[in-house]
Length: 245
Image 1 (spheres, one colour):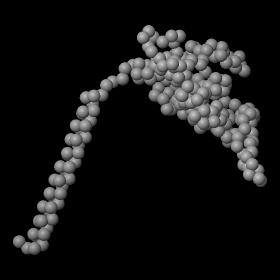
Image 2 (tube, rainbow, N blue to C red; image 1 turned 180 degrees about the vertical axis):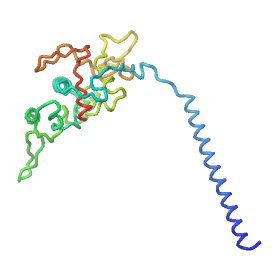
Image 3 (cartoon, rainbow, N blue to C red; image 1 turned 60 degrees about the horizontal axis):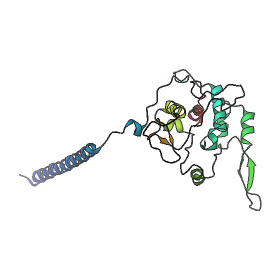
Image 4 (cartoon, helix red, strand yellow; image 1 turned 90 degrees about the vertical axis):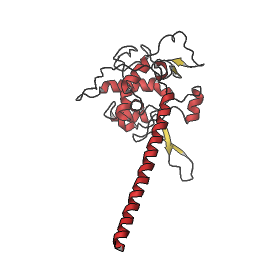
């Protein structure tokens, strides 16, 4: 056998041995991972309905169809509900005033709303801080200066920002609607709640810091439409978050 043939044969054998080693390592890793996953599955426990929260029923929203769109009058009323009720605790940090123009309000109406708030401006020539009226490009301000202030005002709970709340929750509009209208007058017998907590079967665990906030006749609209707490025509203010967030 020539030296060249011997060298080629040796390289082939080494390569074959290396492949066996690599394949063996991969197989061992796979078996180890499978064993770990199997052991974890033995101790896994399914969540109860109370722990997971009730599954929200499906509602026939007018915007669910392929060629359907949002009711802009409802969005307008919905933003009014946000300002009158929800804005006391919840922010819309990712929604700029300009996104309301042509969707729920006119340009002049939005300008008037944003100018009610003051925003930080460039300092003057001496470096002193200044304030200015809001502009369309500004983002809608929240009710609290920071997270600590929000928690202090809500017994340690942090009210979530509503900009993307529908997209961030399983069930989307159905879940939010069910949660807001799902507060019973009294919790079921045997349910123990922490101090200051409220019962809502659609919230995971059933214990939620936010109390019931929507009631019949709570909000007055410009068009004299009355908000109905349990009625299906409850203005879905959260559609605003879906569309603009």
